[in-house]
Length: 194
Image (tube, rainbow, N blue to C red; front, side, top):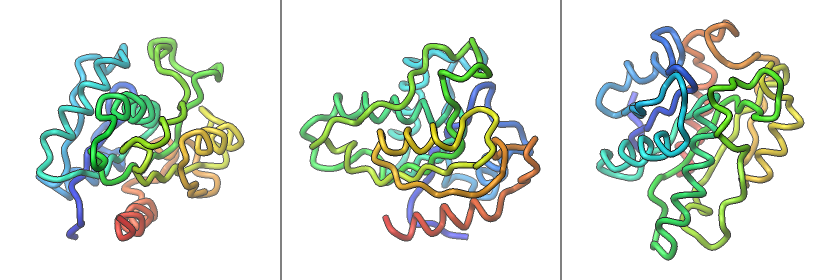
């Protein structure tokens, strides 16, 4: 299946295992997808993850679509704010779009203590190239790591369009979504708008 853009895969804490939909999609896409490679998978450092996203984006021949899950959503939100500051005045965004799935809530009791340095999404400065990055936030109605109301508030803060997918838990292996073909269709439809 061909896509109009390369992907940068941004997994959550501890990386996505082989059965996770991100890993399945990456295998199917081969060289058209690159995964971030932070040094701090188990004790995530926001600066390390920002740098890892920047390296992955820079390795792409054209602006990619960021495909993030869980803590990866917070990392992308943080990176977009930092990228907006770093490239203020640039003619265009460094990424084509952001497809963000199942954000965790840093204020929730189940949020991993090891990732406590990651903030909730903040507004991207208006008028910057990063503020023009089309963003979709995929929200599950029964995510144990973030209420739907809190996820909707994150989307509003980020200026992201919301894609509600019903009760899919944390949209991961434990949720039973497998390769998540419905998510692949959502991403494909999003890519057609870029």
